[in-house]
Length: 249
Image (cartoon, rainbow, N blue to C red; front, side):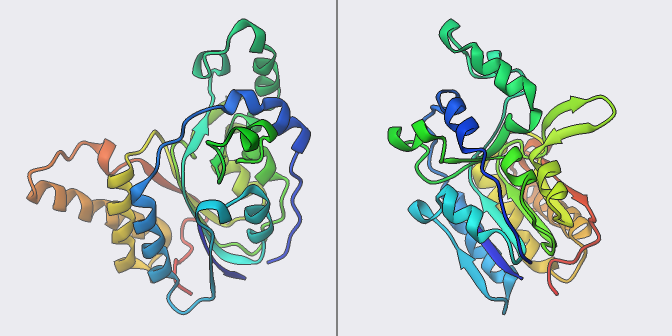
């Protein structure tokens, strides 16, 4: 995960609730080789900004929560999750059906980002390897201009009548982030890395326009290489919020 500079804040962690839901998050999360390339891309986009990089063990829940406030740009390159149908998505056994009630009570608990230690049993049991949308919504991220949520289904969530989609993207915007880039499905690691690397050429443009041009370039490159141009490989991301915000200052 990477972040580039400058706001203030405080975050509530809902520790007890995460611990109660920890059994639902038990999973073997695979490595994401493309994430390292995305960090390189993010650092290039940051240019001369003061930057802070959190990777591997350093990207713990406590470190991430402490580091998010006061930055101009946030960039997450990790796994994401969204439980639209908790019982189905988690394949809950009868003795764990109580978790379904927790997840359905607050749609913002049903999505989040995977952090350091997610494959370690002792960290899983505390729930501290995850940053939920509910966690983020309780923060003060005023001053953050763009949040890049490069993880699966960060733009997906349950639809609440009269409210809209309760997704991780919504949580960042509620916390004060001006614009977000989020994923609409389970994205491919390599394709995502290639797509975001193309943003380097458009840092002086509004994020919405820059993302559109990066997608165009990715389509052209894939077509020239004889690769599939199916939208799965390039069309999974959308800019939301104040999408006219520029990447570069």
